Image 1 (tube, rainbow, N blue to C red):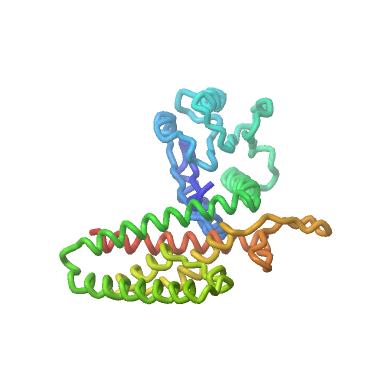
Image 2: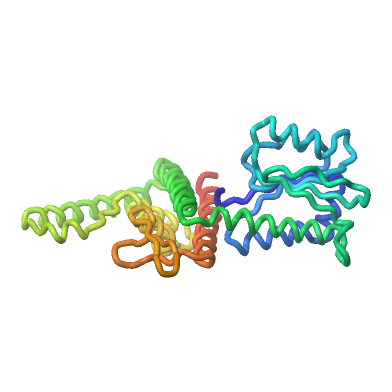
Length: 301
């Protein structure tokens, strides 16, 4: 799972879900959980098969779609492509025999749910399944992997922005100032490190994280934002993204034998890993991904 939560939804009456606000409700739920929602809706089986891939975190389908194939046929098509995503099949038909249980596939017969309209029942079950997939993903090992992947993607995007800006003939004066700023900082930094080495203050050297790559990218990004008259969020990016990434990268997994709580310990401070912390990390990554996407669009245009 990545920071973008992908859903593929097949229903020949999908417009009704859209018009009644249920798709917006699902989008808002995902945003509240710290994800960037992407819901691909289709009304035809051939469209569904065209978009079908293992990138989706959840697949939703009307079991009795009137388009040549039913749910049983589509299960075969999906599994033949080695796709093992969570799937929800649903139907409003009263005369329907629920298929035998299949791993990672749920079946919902909304006519058996008293007092709830069909669309409401499907949406409630969708939200439940989303919560289930998020909970599975929130184990601390999986979460660390997501943080590393998404922050590396942001690093690559920032690199692209920096290269495009610095190689553009439109920013010659600003580029000269940025280059001089970075060169001066490098001279100062290496000068200070040589002093430490010459004085043999090993304890000081060990405490210096020397976050050269990420920190200098942040400084250059901040200068580009300043010259582009865009709000500079580089300091907050360092605090909320780079620092968290580095703590997870160097933390050790531990378990409190009394409470059973698993947590990462960074130096002497245990990072409390719970639902709210997961949500905050995802929200921060999603927030900066959207900011960087916007900047990339402005600077690379």
